[in-house]
Image (cartoon, rainbow, N blue to C red; front, top):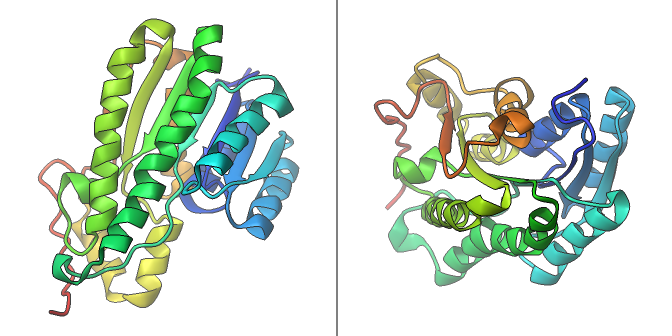
Amino acid sequence: MGQLDGRVAMITGGGEGIGRGIAAAYLKAGAKVVIAEFNEPLGKKTAADLSAETGGEAKFVLCDVGEKEQVQAAVNHTVEQFGTIDILVNNAWSGGELSRIENKSDELLQYGFKIGYWGPWWAMKTAFPVMKAQGYGRVINLCSLNGVNAHIGSTEYNSAKEALRALSRTAAREWAYTGICINMICPAAKSAAYLRVVSEHPEIEASGDAANPMGRLGDPENDIAPVAVFLGSEGARYLTGNTLFVDGGSHINGSSWAPVLPE
């Protein structure tokens, strides 16, 4: 018996990185998984690969989380495919740049909020009536130490993720009576977005590892996903509105990570 036997989960940005790691762990724990991904070839391949690797059932749905209609359609597609949605993991992120505040554009900030805040908002509101009716729901929002620690260079990301934390805590309070639990994970992991930044700024990887109390950033499937499995399970029935720092201890004293940015 797996922790998530019989459960249905939708994971945004499930094609790679932390999203893929959570999808793999959910399948191994007995859940059926819908991978909502805007990169169609990647999403289809990940769903097929994970189904073959785990023996579970993973399906793909095309979804740009910056588009309201696509987010709503993805949640509805999950319900149509599997009869319900028990777990919603808002993980997707795209875009952004490493630069100083004075060099950011309004458009970049607006885009960051569409992906990092509005996308989860639309997904949560669409899933809510289904979860409320069945008296069971788990929403897991991937937030970030970048926002908590105010890391430099990523204003659009930090701001959207902290807004998402505020939304999550408020929804946890308002929806507590329904059986829906909402929690946040702030991971320190070598996510797909992190690896893209490192590809452009390779010096960041060594400093990031060195700044972590455990001496390394986490692995998406082996370090981050097990916590997401627990949060999606019956065992988390009395846990809501919390931020879990799955970060090797980085949050304890704050991170000293501070890349040199051009003026």
